[in-house]
Amino acid sequence: MQLLEDRIQKDGIVMEGNVLKVDSFLNHQMDITLFNELGKEFHRRFADCGVNKLLTIEASGIGISCITAQYFRAPVVFAKKMKTKNIVGDVYHSRVASYTHGKDYEIFVSKRFLGAGDRVLILDDFLANGEALQGLISLCRQAGAEVVGAGICIEKAFQPGGDIIRSQGIRVESLARIKSMSAESGVEFC
Amino acid sequence: MQLLEDRIQKDGIVMEGNVLKVDSFLNHQMDITLFNELGKEFHRRFADCGVNKLLTIEASGIGISCITAQYFRAPVVFAKKMKTKNIVGDVYHSRVASYTHGKDYEIFVSKRFLGAGDRVLILDDFLANGEALQGLISLCRQAGAEVVGAGICIEKAFQPGGDIIRSQGIRVESLARIKSMSAESGVEFC
Image (cartoon, one colour):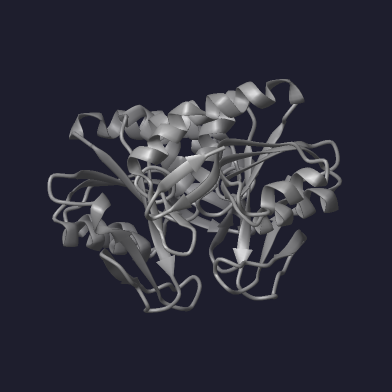
């Protein structure tokens, strides 16, 4: 999506360790006008999939999911993160290995908000190694919910997450796919 | 606001320890149609305040803030939480005492996204003891930003946060103010 690629070129900052800093518009300060365009595009791509629920993970997936949800006229459920294993209550949970943060964490969602019959679009801001997305897919499978696909704002296509998820037969639509990036030469898109 | 009070009566669950569970529509599953009505109401109340930025705190304030931001045509900044004291980078930060969770945490916001000249509306889902709101106000003061007010979805008016913040001269607008609640007698509004 040209609009997002242009914005990344304009305001994204490539840091050491394959980190792309987009905190001025995506995941710390949030440009809601941009979010509406991204939401429209997600809806265009998944409009005919019978989506009745959007699923994301706290915290940075929530904003884009809420704006996008308006186009689907569907509620958003966000999975919560727990640092401990002490998950209580009637929930589905999944362990997420995080290369980025160096430690695993648990995510969970109440069984009341995800179930058989749900047609779920998973949304997130980034896809890199795919750990969080795998965790969200696992929650849906436990619930017997159908994953119609995953909508990603920025996919680091040089990391394996996208291939892994697609090889499982999950449709992944990324609005910007980064082929390579470095502090010296900037960002190149697929 | 009648719509929100009705929804709390219909779907809220009063738990032990003064906990009001509204996770079916406000802070785990999010009813975006409702959020739009809340956002319109926040805008109606603060429309003439020259708001150019919305500030909230992760995670449950993000959704309502993003939807509300559309009415103000302003970006959202969310303060991030850190469990450790190891805040790095060029940030404003503040310590939040949490009675609810029993341990303190640090919140921070990048200095790039909050500054003198900003007219900030702070938004959050709950106001009880007011610790998080105090922390957000502190971030604004450090930045030299003007707090035009705080918009709260649900205020537990029987807890001291609202009085404390209002006594500092901050305008607090809560869409539902709970006078008392108990598992036996339910929720009574102010």
